[in-house]
Image (cartoon, rainbow, N blue to C red):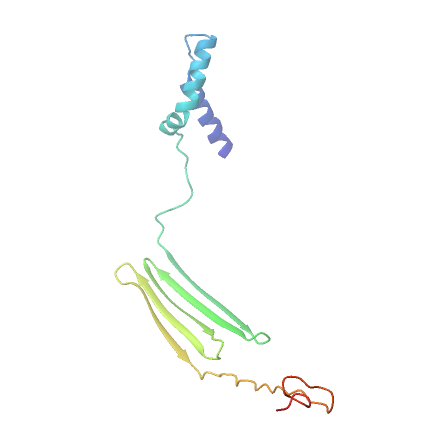
Length: 158
């Protein structure tokens, strides 16, 4: 189908350029003028004489859908879900996910032409914060005899 459209457009450009029905009958001057005219004006002329094509897409269809999605991976701890429905220009939905601190964030949202986008965010559960790890750094052990520098006589001690 696309090839037919391209052939039709090329034919229209060819006719508009003056190759068919040209009174010059192929003289060098008329050919050069026709070539220049087709180079500069063909896109405008083709657009003016475009071929109408029947399309199968209905741009005025009533938008209505509903979907659900979810992941529950016990190995990685990834748990989330989403659901949404649309009826015309009104969209309603929600999604939830597990936050890094262990709480669950849930968002309920609506959107329409009159109110715009509105969301209500809630958190449930108790946050679990890991305890800091105490790091113990051992002092170097001094050996007797032999280290004297800067007023210290034996090792690193004071």
